[in-house]
Amino acid sequence: MTENPATLHKFLTDLHRQLEQMSPEVIRQALFNHAERLAASERGSFLNSFSVGQPSEPDIVNEMADNQQPVPDLSWPIEHDQLLEEIDDFVERVESGAYFQGFGWDGEIHDERSFGDESWVDEMEDYFAAANDTFHSGRLGLARAIYGKLFDALELDEEVGTFCGSEPALSMIGVELDEAMSRYLRTVYETTALPERASELITAWLSLPTPYAAPTLGAVRECRLPELPEFEQFLSSWIDELRALERHDRPAHNLLVEAIQLGEGIDGLGTLARQTGSAQGSFYLDWVQALRAAGRITEAADAAREALATAGATAVVRAETAGELAELSAGDPTVVLEARRLAWRARPNLARLLALHYAAAQTTGPTQVMAEELAAFESREQRSGLGQSLYTSLMLLAGEVEQATHLLAQPPEHHLDELSSTILVPYLLISGCGGLTHPESSKTGLIEYLNTVGGHSWPFSSEPHDAVVRSDGGIPTLAQLLSTQISSETATSAALSFRLDVALKQMGRQVDDIVSNKQRGRYAKAAEWLLHGAEALALARGGASGRAWLQDWSTRYPRHVAFRRELDRVMQRTPLAVTSFDA
Image (cartoon, rainbow, N blue to C red; front, side, top):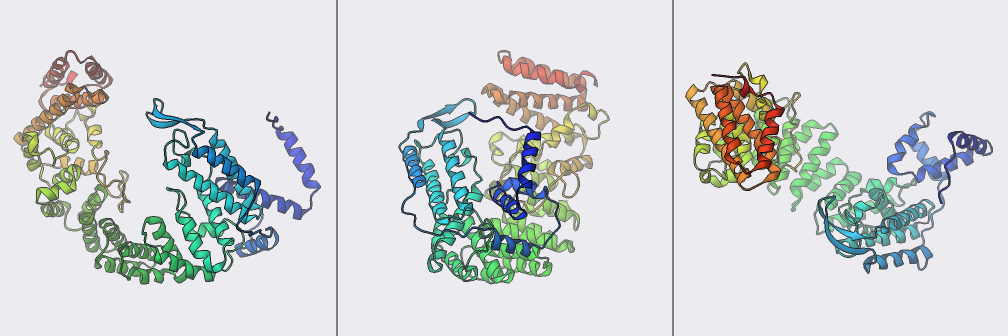
């Protein structure tokens, strides 16, 4: 049974009494022992609770290393220990399915999961806590054995029938895995003789359970107070091991970059980048970014140009390198424009398109540049590579609104794989009714409808964006650009009316598809679209036209009660222009 916690008064009184009986050295040792076991997330607040001077960091580290650390026990391998036997028994139970009961659908999380006895979580957390205590006490050989068994056990989650829970085992346990991994790797380092150290460490490193196998060498150095022994001699072997690796994934790549910088500095990255290999472009990018971080801007720009002139980089790396060159060349708009163009063509995405548009606005003019880019994607295959959203955005920003309108007016099979209705319909609907300049537009939700453009999923959206897209300054959003373009257009009345009709027809096709196929989850969205259509009609042709549009849709599906309910709800929620505007 849990003991009742002491009151604050009793706690402080007892603490004061005990501190009075302790010497300064004992108090200091107790604080270090407590601080060493704090979770990483608790360290900052603990340190901030002290306001005692600012001795230099080397003095602090040297004093703690010399006076406060226990002499480590580096015995390895560990032949026998009761705790290791307990862990072996626990792992056998996991592997045999003792905690697993079945796999199926969970209505609470709306996904499949494994069910069973989740007490394994508490057991594993206790074993990790024991590993941490063992590590902090200086028994590094035993800590290595404990950590190793626990990390090996987590690999069992690759097969159904072992662990159970609503998430992967790595996410179920309340353990700071990055910290635990750094400590484990530190034990491998310190319990391995120098000749074998680099080889054993890389083997342990790359066998850690994914997706967490990404501690840095710096983290390993800093998870215990003393400096890593024989570090300079080790670093040379470590670099050799990393260079010899056949795998070139991101964790291994990052380890080599870190090691080169530690051993040879930023210029060493330049030497590495100039060597041939499948990851050459990525090393160039690392070099450019390191130079930029060090404030060596001219050298970074030169390195970026050299990288772009070198074959072998992937499209993503080439695009990011060009983005770096654009940022490094902020004082020269012409260079920025060409760098943004390179980035966009290498790997098109929304951020790069908007960054290119912004750069063009500072030089020759964005419409001309957008038209040039549209021409660069002439073939249907090239347009398909852009994707519907980017191709449609590019057409509009290039000023080809009429072309896009006539293409959308064709039967769907002629444009189904090219145009994005999510972007084009709001544009044509709002421009066609004069919705941004009409004196009554504030009574509608059309401006908010346009602001949704660009807020959906885009191709390659998981890539790092080398352009910051925001609505409060800097590079404008797509919705802002389209809004500006609509407001400044000079199309004829006939052209605007045609746009409105084409947008309404396409909107109708989309609503028909949703309702006729009983896509209940999209009924609310379809109802909002119809409301915007009615608002646009009311602005352009009077309230009677908007009311007729809604009435038609309200009666078109008399048996679809759920859809009609959504349409009624949306109509009641919004002050409708259709109820007050008359031709």
